[in-house]
Length: 202
Image 1 (cartoon, helix red, strand yellow):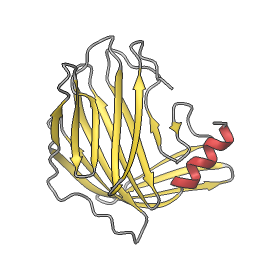
Image 2 (cartoon, helix red, strand yellow):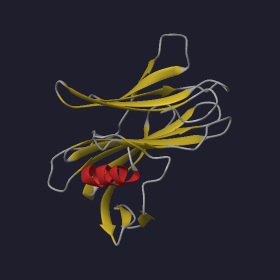
Image 3 (spheres, one colour):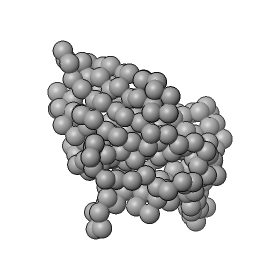
Image 4 (cartoon, one colour):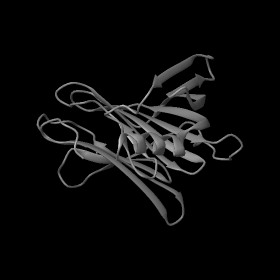
């Protein structure tokens, strides 16, 4: 996808206002923090600006860029993911976002050097769209992979599943997969993969 098309696709599906709830889970899948947010994504004078307001504190975090970051993978449907340029025996943070019209689901996944440390689940919708966050406290069900690997799945909500490494082994690939069923019979999937060499895979 060309730079122009990446930019156009990202804005077409993600620009505008989003009201959300951030829910942070610890390494056991238990809710440790929750707060509301308001996100505005706009384009002004060739610059894309994302301004996130934390409703619990009033703090505003703003990010501006002329083009989507090179490390941002963008699908034709507007789904996107971000992560480091390389993984290795150090912490790695990845963010994945699935968008379905006026609703989005995001996760921010933090792997430590040895294991999965935390997951932030983000439920977002356009203003006026009814899309409630899961009832507190959220407790993800951790489902082992069952294939002898270190990977497993977190059933975050009834319609949202995260699959990734629960433990890390140096020299093994690292992948994060987010699966969302916004409606019965409709399934959206996004995956970000790093190979055994630590480099992102297409």
